[in-house]
Amino acid sequence: MPEVGPLLKHWRATRRLSQLALAAEAAVSVRHLSFVETGRANPSRAMVLKLAEVLDVPLRERNTLLLSAGFSPEYAESALDAPALAAVREALETILAQQEPFPALVMDRSWDIRHTNTAARRFFAFLQRGQPGNPPGPANVLRRMFHPDGVRPHVTNWLEVAEALVRRARREAIGGVLDERAQGILDEVLAYPGVPSHLRVVDATTPVLPIVPIRYEHAGRRFDYFSTVTTLGTPQDVTLQELRIECFFPTNDETREHARELAAPGRSNGD
Image (tube, rainbow, N blue to C red; front, side, top):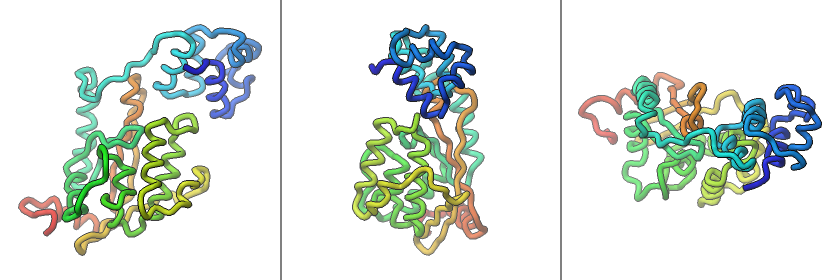
């Protein structure tokens, strides 16, 4: 494990706080904080948690801080199907169901798709009908958008969407740095055939449009969607804090009509 002092200093720099500002917020002396960051003093468990709270460190990284300081983790990382998360699963199901007949999905911080509503499964099956294969590995939003066997051939403004996704992945990076798995997936998809090399150096801080719609076209139908991303409030579990709920909304009546046609009983996805 890395030492706790440099980790705290990293988070303070990430949040753009001076030692004086952090010390004032956490009610500790600047001298003691300086000693902690340089390794001349060992913080107590309570101090690590207090500094992490002030710095708004994600729960997974708070556990890392505690381990680095020689303490046990504070926050559980439950399986999504654990009995303790039954109420959350019910809430997720409700959100996904309410989005019908438009797509919605739940993903984790590595962009793996954990759950989808019926509309999402129906829509992506429609787009990929007749294709020779699927993107490699577990279902993942980035793989699905970037791989030649994913939905990329059906996105008419793919380059615009791809740039927005790369910016978003880097902007949402934990502490300014993607975790190992998310970074690996991003490196993987940027190396797919046909992906422009300039996407590897997209600046996450560059101003972008308020909304980047995704425009799909397949089998004579066009679908224009924009999405919203929702997180759970006040999570106290690592798994729950890292969940993202993405709901897709139509931008025009044509998309609404086509979505309802796909959902109509007795109609196949290719009709």
